[in-house]
Amino acid sequence: MSGKNLTHEEINLLLPWYLNGTLESEEKEAVKKHLSGCSLCTSEVEELQMLRNGIVRASERQNEMMSVPVERMEQNIMDRIETFEESAANQRSSVSPSSSESVWSRIQGFLDGISMPSLSPVAMAALFVIQFAIILGLAGTLYFSEPEYEVLSGNPQTAEITGPVVMISFQDSATEKEIREILTSIDGRIIDGPKAGGLYVVELPEETANEKIMENVIQDLSTNTNVIKNVFKGSR
Amino acid sequence: MNQTPENKNLTDLKLLEEIASGDREAFKVIYERYVRQIFSFVYKITKDNKLTEEVVNDVMFEVWKSANSFKGNSAVSSWIFGIAHNKAMNELRKKRPEALDPEEFSRLAGSEDNAEEIIVKKDRSERMNMALNELTPEHRTVLELTFYNGMSYQEIAEIVECPVNTVKTRMFYAKEKLKESLNRHGINQEEL
Image (cartoon, rainbow over the protein chains, first blue to last red):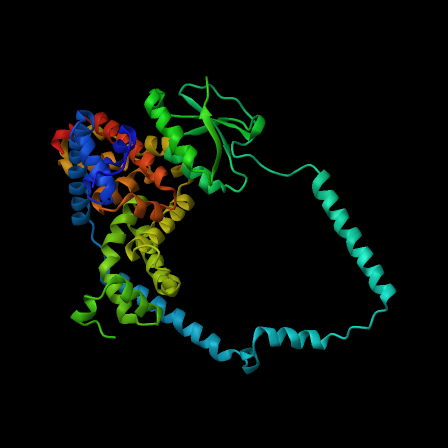
């Protein structure tokens, strides 16, 4: 198997998982092939190996020092489950027999209970016109009124820019949590915006000033189309 | 079902099916299989023993309640770690909102008195732990799940609920930050 066709940067990002042996075979082959001719990535693997050893030792050391009260915790959780199940059983037994009817039959029963006067065709038409007018009125209010929203960066502001910046606009459907996740992953912070087109100015750490790293960050961000609408390099 | 040696050999998926049908012995097997791993994982995020106990209790209770909603789209371990990550991060946000700001978090973590004096007395694992403690929970999590728990980037993406590319870039920054932190404490990587 010759493996996937990946760039040096893409390979570089995969190295931690090459080291822990979890890459799929095509990616693994591609990394292996690349390593045979790239001294930069080879030394990166060696460095990662040292970090990995340190992390494993540190975790093992922490686990040795940490006393997990397994028995007490197990007792607590089993008690909690017992209480939960008892209360669920009580709820089930207190439900009246009529509730075993289907939802539909209950709705039907409810509707049957409502006495509806028979309407003449003229009254039906009048009812329709009134409903239509209400819908038009609501739509107008929504369309013409000032939209209510808040921006993630708070009030528009301009901060002093020291690191490299990217311009990002987010999808309307993106949640605050998703945006926060993205910003955390790139160590970015919103320093200005929203500007025209909903663009925010996001400052990145100094190390992203490197052309290759910046390219990589922008490429990664642009693949996240669920959250990001547009992303491009900004200027200070 | 009894907690016999045979039951202990059942796969996570089979145990989860048993739990979904109300089998408490199956739950005990899963509990014993995961409690230490989850405790260690949550502790690295919360750095608080009591809070960790509460979170682990919530995680395992969620496993009991939601076993029947497990779709099997991921490994059971990723599912449980995902619940743990979610609950731990929520608790952390409630407890210390500043944890959301990576710079502030690093500043606080690095502000221990006489840090350098303490470092000299610690062995290398403890020094590594100090360096790891300076990372944001997001950065530490990706490093731990990769190097200690041996998870793939796809599994990590499921656990931390973000795109795989975010996991890769997060790892890139996490290792840069860890190297910086090690340098700051005068720790040579070759010593590790």
